[in-house]
Amino acid sequence: MSSRERILGRVRRALAEAPGEDAPLERTYLREHGQRSVAETVELLAENLADYRALVHRCTESELAALIGRLVADRGAGTVVVPAGLDPAWLAAADAEVVADRAEDTPHQLDTVGSVVTGCAVAIAETGTIVLDGGPDQGRRRITLIPDHHICVVRIPDQVVSSVPQALERLDPTRPLTWISGPSATSDIELDRVEGVHGPRTLEVVLVSADQPSAEVTS
Image (cartoon, rainbow, N blue to C red; front, side, top):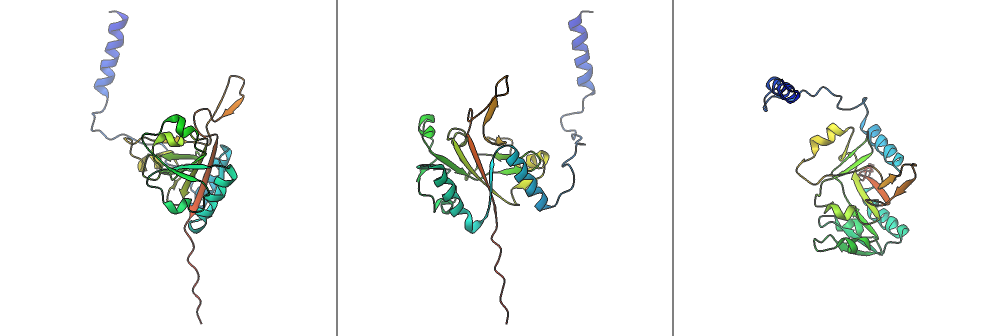
């Protein structure tokens, strides 16, 4: 018997012993590491985002427009590209030209844009990862890969999960998923870090929470 025949025989035996296509997969791995409260999960997300050199900000819904306006102004961006489904109120305080995400825009045109503002699909606390799925408030993948400054809004706690398995349960694998862990960076063989190679050089993540209802005054 030749080596080829022995290898093919092993493959056939392995396939014969494999469960059928409809057999449920055994998932014995941990769904999350440790038990955390919602507040602790959000804190872990913020810590890991910062570890990846993302700039993390916190605000409430009513403060969001002012914060985005300040971040755009601090960047000195004259133009901001936005997805079609982004809430226009988010850019109400931004003193910059708002550019819609359009299919006909070329990479060169997007490279001249100062900033991009998007929402997200989910944020993973344990890995400090933001996931975009091309939803209405996130737009085409290229608008978050070409401009040099990305402001990403994460609603807390609704869009925050602890782990990758929990995130996968929320995501549609047929959609164009972009997994972002900090600003774009790479390093050469001597470990010299270079940022902005294949995505934004600066990632700013805004963790936005709902406004607290005002307390009723009773007599």
